[in-house]
Image (cartoon, one colour):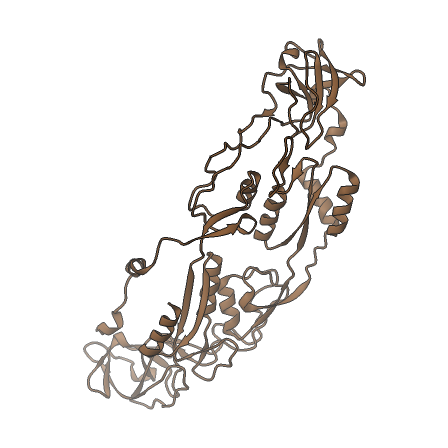
Length: 250
Length: 250
């Protein structure tokens, strides 16, 4: 087999990628992006929480806010009796304080009232009268609570640079009131089709011609990868035609 | 542990999904979509090719179109000599025919000229003069060719219903001149936030309040899955408020 060298003036994928990397701008340009629209975008600047989360001590269960010490030793056979002096409304500051021997009804996510330091699950209580309950098991101080800043601390960088934003990240950013982030501008990639045999997909190929499909397949792959494809059209098989479309792309 | 039944009026995920499926419209509505814009959409109607692909016999290599029988027995030590009578231009019908003892220069993807039934790779030839070549190895009839309709036959359903369109499918559809497909309309999903403790993400929560983040996380998950989320806002914890937003969503 005789080789004709002009047919082998090609590079390996590794060499081709290295050549490309030498010419590519690898430092992404930062653009502002509303968090609502940030799905799939890549963070340039790590967003920093302006607040603690939660901002108040919250209950993790439905039940009764108590002073833990009032429940020590309580059991099914020897319950602790507490007087219910109110209820914490959802979305409001807890208005009633809990004093020794007292309790306040509370729901999951609601704010712990002053004086209380734990919550008893409703499943471990029993109503005796309209204002009196039995507590059937003890709780430790801090039990069934989320403390201030337990999820996020004010000043924490909550996501790293280079992170691609997922649905749950949108929720996380909004939870601390971050409404805008700095993300990498999508890379714009110009696509030049080349070949005397190519016609546009909407044209009817004459004998010897085929439709240009690589431009559109590449455009879809780029869009899928988060880039912005720019289809430049088809260059004839001359250096001038290729140069013209490549220059226009740049 | 005493149980309070009203707290356990919940369903398993399986039961909840079955309940939902009983109310959901599972037959997707078909909408027309340009193939250029069809990435990620789901086909309702299998697209049928209006044409064979390729539409002409093409070479798969750079080399020389020949009558295979003229190369039988050729070898490095005893080459076959052929007279080159022309070249097939890319994107044009092959103008010159190949007669016994003749050959025509041809490139990958070009149309096989009349009279020829195979192509010899250029690597297996050697130029002797401007018009004469040596063929150093034989080819069988049909070698290094793609026949008419070998990729796709006219009338073939080229993708099944239910298929989610990938980048390469866009190329495949365009290759046979299909410019529009029938895809499932994206399901629209209304999202109702609920809870007296919720405020909008752009609001500053008062003590006991938190920002609604589930609406936006769910919206992003839906968008990622190809659905169209519609955020309805936040309903207070009353049946009337929930009913009103749910009705408005429907």
